[in-house]
Image (spheres, one colour):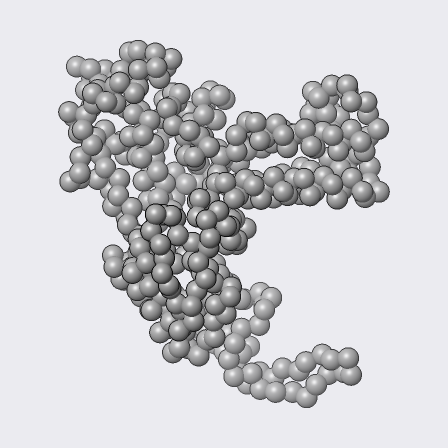
Length: 380
């Protein structure tokens, strides 16, 4: 940070006096010694400066306190190699004053929390443990106790979800609670807007400008099935027909026509958003880029896709609902899209003839279980 900017911040925060607005007028002034005002335009930058030493210290110990991610490669013999692959660690994330700490087990998580506690004590920061929750992903392991600054942390029960920023995490992962929350948002939106005195055009505008962006944000790391998208479309069409006083047999295609209401089906909105996100992830650096490469390599091994499944989309024997990238491949396949990239392949020593291209997409899908069992991917 340049010297002029430091002096600028110093001029704002040094020798500052606050007064409080009350029902009886302004209170007397008092000098502000520390703290950050909520809603200040510089707040995100100041929190980043404040948390940077803590995040750097946790990252320095991430092999002890972070979550280890291993992805194995497939050798020429078709066996998954245990000695080579891609390894990454993820230990912490922060946005303003919302933080998330990730560990492989209870001991590693507590190791990170001890570093965090020391940092908060040094800087005289009080933590509300009621706003802190531990979410164990492996339900087979019982979490006895975790604490931060000497205060116990509550542990989420099985199936219980907790919000971090705009997404929901639970012991069952990310996808189910996020899609469930998005479903509640759609039902709540339609029920509330139907009671408002607005026109059909205003209703369609609110769907496109408010509801669909909310759903896209909630499900940005999840893949929503076609059945769920159709249920949401039915709710929206029902609300629009009610506002426009249209009969129930009015054609659905007319509601989606650009010259009439211009609505987009939720499945189309998901496809557009996911393709844009994929472009960003595939070109990202840092931990986001590495996490994407892990998921990409894992998808290749799970689906036994000897070729890049984004550049050469094929039907995979992997559920798109439980695998974000498998959902992306399904979108690419359905819309005849390809993505040319320089991503690494999980198959280290391929032969000359990929069986997916020799057998064809349909036959390869039918044979993929047997091919994976015998470790066959290429022919010479």
